[in-house]
Image (cartoon, rainbow, N blue to C red; front, side, top):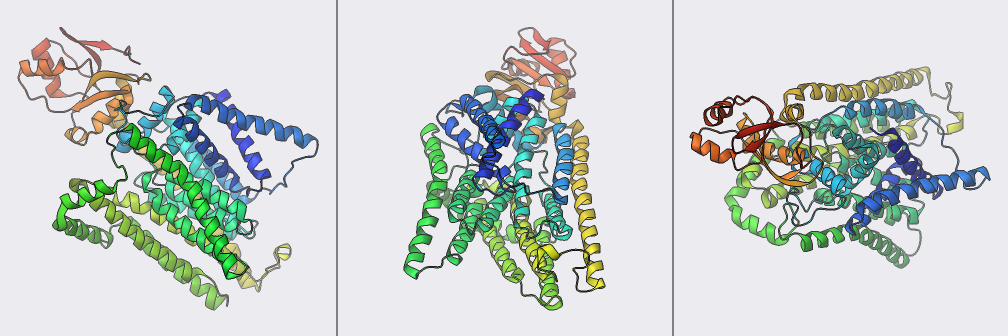
Length: 617
């Protein structure tokens, strides 16, 4: 990692943060706002084919803003009040740094890293542009590039590595997570603030299929949505800032992944509800104001995505996972009613199987919110919105079930759909969003239920009785304890996953050759003794990513005659053997009279010649 580049990048981020703070953005939302603003700026540069220039311009602009505010600060201008540090700040910084250290030493292993997310970052980093029609190394060309652009900016300054990519995405996640503390009424209360810390830690339980040591966006989507919902609430008395915030977050979400439409819809519904409840004029003026703000904000938010849709349509003749009514209609007519019923039966069975982590999460959220409603309503004699919140959460979950089922039926091959491929991943995103929504409403309900509502009078004597005081102290201690324990559980779980992955194909490949950083068209055969890696195209995608080529192929079966084997070998320019393959070694000995076990080899007419680095990279 280049420390000078990291410092320069960090100064740029501080510049954006300082600017947004002075524009009235909440200090708890300023970090994610700074990141999302840079993403949209980078997106504009990338669409104009000026990505490298854009990375420099966007970062330098941040540094210039920081220097400007520092100079003005010396003359007493442009200063903003310091929010102060709280216990949860220590939790965020301390455990965040520990997680960064772990992620910095983590490899990429998950299939989808190599089918799209990591290879997209590598492409942007080393070509300085978005992929075109001839860049077949990128398979999912309709996927928007938001997180890839953000990660590319980071690795441009600190150096390209798998650890650096993971750190970059974690910074975006951690900044969005920090926004939840903006909803606290009294940030000095350990009970409520660490309840949110515990929520952050527990949310990773429902991300267990992916974890943070992957570049997939299944956690990014809900946590950015949470930041969007927080801003809608916090800025409810500042409609202009509220609209700008919604437009920024919604535009960014739509550029993260096509499936973000559902999460944007959740934001839009809450935004509309807040606009309606905040109006104090005549019904005619209220209607015009609400429709104007709501429609205008969503139109602005949709413009970057519409630009991307136009780009995909005019750049690629055919694109995987592209949003297309014609494609959906064709898929539905091809599948037939019987197929839909089979998928539906499997879908419902999965939900009620008793082994679904997402279902367990939904049940847990329901039970906790009902119990907390009862305690606050009948024990503290306080009305609270927890039941209404729970109803909204359940409706949201049911609607997401419907959209997810539609995805299986309309846009996924039957072989994958009947297996409900990725079900827990996709549902986990919704459970995470529901968990945060419930927690944020709960902490405010708890605060309103406190005996002393005057913040200045809250001290060790501001309790109804010694019993409530002891209960508060015990509850605070338990929240702090479990928030730390659960976060360390995620950290240790990531470490354990890294240890378990030592024998996986990506790490084996790194032991026999170096990765390439120059885009090429070399024909590379990756010899893999595991048929599953080849049949799922995992080996081929990995070869493409690692050697930065669009012609990587994985193969496991070499049961063929010497003549066929020789003809097969001569089709390639390089052969990578990360793990000993008995059949391949035997056939090579028979055909070329060579004894080879592992390594990277150049194919010659006389056989294989061991190499350390390829001319292409």
